Amino acid sequence: MNRRASSSYRHQSGFTLIQVMAILGLLGVVLTVATSGYLTHQSKHYIKEALLEAVQARQVVTQNIKSGVQDDKGWSKGYISKQGENHSWTVDIDPTSGAVIVTVWTLMKPATLLWVPLKEGSSKEETVNQAGPKSLNEAGQSWICLIQGDSIPDATRLMGPLSSQVPPPGLSPDLVSSDCR
Image 1: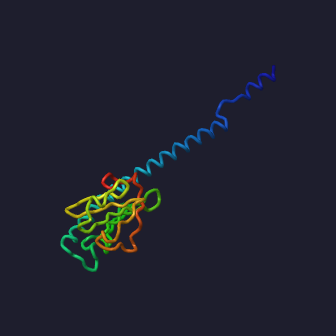
Image 2: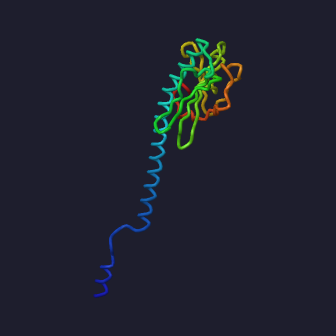
Image 3: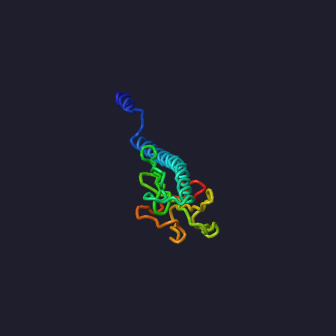
């Protein structure tokens, strides 16, 4: 009788090591998915901010093109490079080509979107095809948006040659707004 009593006291309630490991594994998966979603949402927010600033940069370039103003700052005269909160994005203008360079930090690495002004005579029909970059006409100035996978147009269609400091477009199409897809 004494043996039965002592064996019933040995039975304890609680979780086994396997159960605890399974719960921790599930928590890891949930946290990974949540973190990825948060970072994507944060990247889209930064891109929206940067694209709003890019509108102002395009307006400065358009004004300089219309007035024929070009000095030692080139097409970027009157614009000061801008940065987002915590250096999350930058918007700058390439002085030789007038390209608006939008660089956004997405998932811990920089990605670039380019708005490139086109010379007069580079029609919208010429610029846009199903697989190519999206064009925009703003105040009579034609622009094309270059993202990941887009190639830079022929130099004869650009306002000037792209400088060597202009990075290749690398922003993912799923992160940009509809005016650039």
